[in-house]
Amino acid sequence: MIRESADVAIVGAGPCGVTLSNLLGTYGVSTVVLDRESGVIDYPRAVAVDDESLRTFQAVGLVHEVLADCIQNAPIRYHNSQGRVLAHVGPSGQPFGWPRRNLFFQPLMEATLRRGLDRFAGVRLLADTEVTGLERTADGVVLTGARNGEDVTVTARYVVGADGGRSFVRRSVGVELAGETNPSKWLVVDVSDDQLDAPYSAVHCDPVRPSMTIPLPYGHRRFEFKLLPDETDERMVTDEVVMGLLAQHYRDTPMPRISRRRIYWHHSRIATTFQVGPVFLAGDAAHLQPPFFGQGMNSGIRDATNLGWKLAAVLAGRADERLLDTYDAERRAHAETMVSFATRVGAMYEPRNRFTERVRDAFFVGVQRIPGARDYILQMKYKPLPRYTEGAVLAPATPDKGSPVGRMFGQPSVETADRLRMKLDDVIGPSFAVLGIGRDPAAALSAEGLAFWQALGALTIRVDPARTARRGAPAEDSAAAATPANTAAEASATTAGEAPTRSTGGIGTGASHDRAPGTPTDPRTGSLLVRDIDGAFRDLRLGRPTDEIIILRPDRYVLAVCPAAELEATTRRLRALLGVPPAAARDDSTGPVAPPTASPRF
Image 1: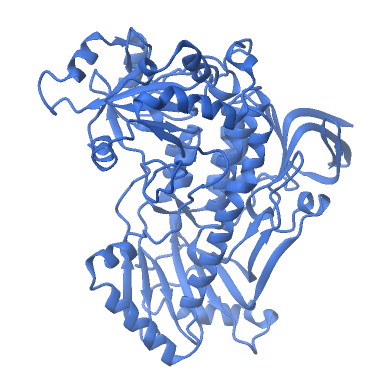
Image 2 (image 1 turned 60 degrees about the vertical axis):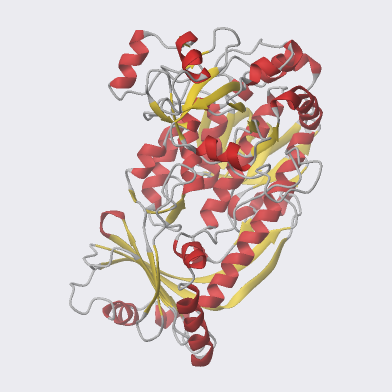
């Protein structure tokens, strides 16, 4: 008999489940992950990872390892049935700090994420474990199952079902997966030893047989072909048919080796709720979408990013359980948007006839002649980004479409007083942040207000203008008075490219949060001091002068904005919103968590 207990049990060790496990490990939350497979599945399912997901991998210290196995900034070409290129989508901007579209080989990425779990003593992975029972109790949930013929029992306060479209967890709590399945089927073929000279994804929007091809790292490539109504599954997976379809792409190139071939249905489905008491659904267990826009896995990682910090805050006693109710309120609406969007994109891939194809082609050509519309398409700005209007956000008192509240905050680079250039998230670490544009947030808070933010492990950060903004500016005075937070040894380690040792605290512990080596602090308030070298904060201030304070959640969504004079009142409202118990502001009993050190942060 195997018996395990943890704060959180996760069923499913795919990208969503293992990403959540790494996040919880970073926060010091004891976690057990159960997966029915004995190891990483050796064939790819997802093929594209976006900048939002990379930002999450950055938060857990694994982004460089993941990117090492990616084709970065991968473009897409859309062709009509005559072979004409309708659009070449090549996103170059990096608003969240990372390339927008990257192609990867899923077995390699999953292996990287699983190795990341080895850094956390409180995270255990039980592979080859089939979960067959789920019982809710007064204290949480009990899972039962078997591993190599031995009974397994896991007791946890919360359970997350990240166990795929046929989720056992979802069925156990009686949640329906509502929606529809497209009546057409697609043949998916993965090949290796690929020598095709086509370093881009190609979508052939043909009304008869639409298809697509996607280059993957290390000589792998993905092909997808729509099945015609009279074609059977049995015939379409034969060598004769598969090789015939591939040969159309390899006319003057040696044929690759077929790794796998499989028939898929395309589903557009959403769980009717993402939470039932202490049980949560994430990833494919919560939503299924067609693969046309490459957002299925990325949507699951958004789920993990949203849920991880909330579980950590509640388990540490830093927030009321009502915070967990915001997971469904925030994530389900956006998941519905992504499923609908992917379904509409698929309809564009499959024009009903030649006439609708000509209409679509004319639209593509015409819209690219309009400068703003061209950028909207070619830079992938059409991807629906989440904007949370309810949940764990403090919405403006009056409607304000331009407000950043509820949106993911960008990730500009900033500079420390010793001229160390860093991405913003590497300064903050995986916790709350109170940013002041040209203002010290701590100086605008009472002792009680400051204690509230310190209890959440939040950092207060003053963002000053660039050094070259103007001589004699207050920024220079701040830098001169700042005290470096690092030791000489830490600075040397950073210069050498090693991962700095960080004293982590934050949500999971309530201890004072880690700060990056070399980052100066104001000796009067303890706030970090950084400079706005890219002008991103300057532009924010010019566009919205009253947004002097920006408060970020651990998942980098904007929790609230306000003038500096209103920060104390805003803090009181946020304390009520998060349901923080009074004792949390005084409880520092939990010790620090060993930091993730798998990759350099800078």
